[in-house]
Length: 489
Image (cartoon, rainbow, N blue to C red):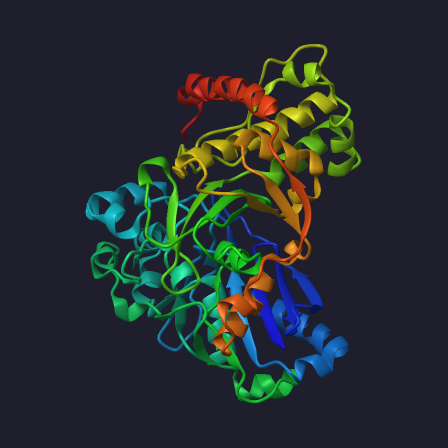
């Protein structure tokens, strides 16, 4: 039995996985985000630990026998967050999260201070990454910066609480900008540009390696055996890839969660920072991945659902499905940048926009425009990945938006490759974390990481691909026309 822990932004999720690949149990505890000032996004690590305690108590109440058989624990979680600890292991301030935008000025400072940043980290400096957050703390909270003995990513702080070990792993560390991604080790050069040293970084392991063992007192409290291994784990997207079996070159997924992601596994480091594409280590040894990211995906559908007063996202999509091809063709174009944009524009000031509204447009037309606009944003990211024809045979669709067959078909038509949904794909990073625990316990890649059974396949329609290409060209022209009009203050 293997326990997977996924520390998300809005929920902490636990799953129990047995050796027949059955999800024996799943529990979740909600989390909230604090926004004490414009662009700020924070959480208290103590709230994560409280959620962990509640979730384990629920598991223990319903699955005591399964917990007694757990051999290893895996960790997944939100990337890029900064947990600052003093020499005694005490947290110095609330964690600054991945979607915090306060450090724009510090990004420019880092790029100037470290001219080789792109070659080392494989990524542009963006406010979402961890390194600029520490530069912001150094400037605005110097007393906190001076006391900082260790910087941990969110899931790695949970590991510290579980094991007492200050350990990170490659996929999450690659999202800090402090990692030499090709060499899979901390970069003294980038750390120095931030006023930090390797002594303030956690020890690194691969995601499928053991990082420590569960504290005896926690094992006794939760009814787990003594000596349970805690695996390195992975950042949320890398762990999700392990969960759906995207572990070999050319395998990947599209995530329609709050944000949107296209993830492709690679056997080498393939950076393209000029297009704001992310090139990170995978959670498996000798493996990397490319990733395009947009900051509003299913979030956009939730927004327009509220805007038009629909009963639910599903109800609005039912109306959208009734539109004729001609009505879809006449629908407004929508720029989906409700929270700024990352790949390929790297524009935190980008905003959403409807273009081409007329009296004929109704809730269904706006709903179509939003899912089409998000799809076009993902298509821009797909182009940034530089995929060659025939290199990718298909992509797995995950996230809340994957429940919509309409949206799945739209993505297949726009990108031009088949989309599949899989049974159990909703387990996401928690399932991947459990699989990484299994690998750390001696399991083999073929044994542990098969792709789950396909639930549905959506093949591209060449005629629709051509029609959408024309709409996409107008979408890109619209962005170019208005990009200079977004407020920057």
